[in-house]
Amino acid sequence: MKRDSLSLPFRLNASQIKLLGCLFMFIDHIGALLFPEQLWLRCLGRVSFPLFAFMLANGYRHTHDRGRYLLRLTAFGLLFQPLYAFCMQNGAWNIFLTLAAGMLAIMLHQACRQSGRQWLGLAAVAILALAAEVLHLEYGWYGIALIFTAHLYFEDFQQLAIAWLLLNLVILIPLSNISMVQVYSIFALLPLRVYNGERGRGGRWFFYFFYCLHIPALYILGRMLV
Image 1 (tube, rainbow, N blue to C red):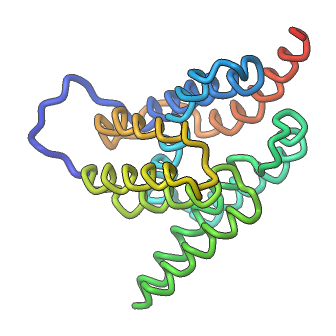
Image 2: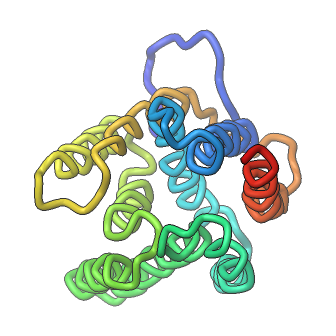
Image 3: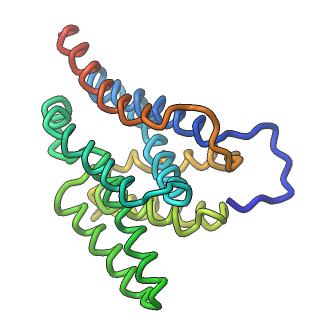
């Protein structure tokens, strides 16, 4: 991400941003599964997905095998989906598959761009965004758009902020199917503003297993509290 002369008191590495994403996701699912009447929990939780969208764009740049990365996201998504559907009961496909679709959108756009047919790459991104909406992937078209713009403006924080602001303004249009609480996701720009470009320490698999374990754990806790 482009650096400037602004003096910042601290920086966050990729592992720390992923941990923040997991924290906000945990808060979001506490709201969804334990305290659905507490809207403020869902508002806080909106910060999580943009952090993971940005980290996916980061991973695209640093992974040694993008095909394997895509396959891993898809495999986890398909294997976890039955349990996810049972616990969440929201009629959506889980976030792994949204991230996989976003990764595919980036890969197709880059391939078309390198062959001199960028228009075809943009068309592929639009088709995947539409498919995400029709198939009810979590976050739908918005999720694909967020991931793609994170990739497109990864090196320019100001352009990324403008793009994400515009996407969140679209949510306010009555025709949008995205909940208007999603506009709180714009606050994800705050930790991303202090990203230092470093990997940091932390297991690559933590997010995968945290996601797959905390949802059923909260579901069971919720059943125990009824």
